[in-house]
Image (cartoon, rainbow, N blue to C red; front, side, top):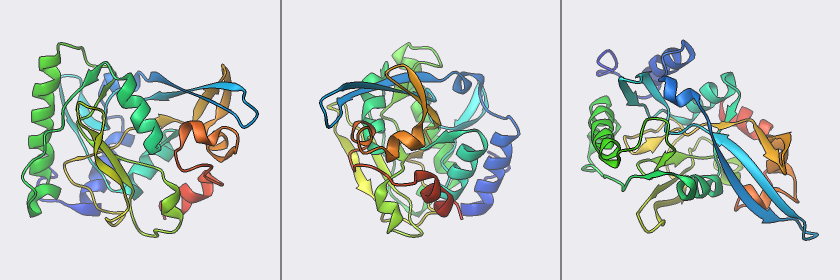
Length: 241
C-alpha cells in the first residue's frame, strides 16, 4: 500500500490486481462461508439456494498484516473472473448481512476529495480492524456492515460505463447506500468493498452455475430483487471491457 500511495484509479487498480492474482491475499479470505437464501418458485415449490462468499472484503496482505482494497468495477470483474467468482446482487448483500456473525456499524469518514486516496483506504481499514478486534470474533467469521458493496445489477445493462453500489448497513439492517449507478465504472472510494461470490451455487443441494440461477425466471427472484438477469455472463463480459 505504501507503493500505491501516490497512485489512483486504474494505475492503483493494476497494482492491486497484480498482487491479488499473484497470491498476495490473506489465508482467512480463502475459506468461503455459505449463506442460504430461501423462497418459492412460481408453482409454489420451496427452494433453498446456498451461495458461498468470502468472509470479508477483498484485501491484500496476510492474516497478520492486510488492507481491504477497494477497486473499480473493471478490476473487480477481472479478479472475479480469474478466480471463478461473481459479484453479489443487492439481495445477496442483504442476506450476507443477515447471516453475518460480525456486524460492524458503518464508520463514515469526512467526504472530501481525498476519499478516493490510498491514504483514506488505509485509515478506514485501520478503523474497521479496531471494530472487528473489539467484536472478539476471529478472522474468517462472516463480517458485514463496514463497506458498501460493488454489486451486479440489471441497471448496468443500460447504465453503460457505470458501477453499481449498494449497502453499508446500519445496525437496524437498513443500508445507508441504496442501489446506485451514479459513479463511473472506474470510481472507487474508501467506503467500497469487493465481496466475492463463488460461481457455483447449491439449489436444494444440487450444484448449479450461479449465472444460470440468476437467469432462471423461477429462481432469480430468490437471489435478485430485480428479477432475472438475462445472460449475466454477457453482461459481466461487457462491463469488464
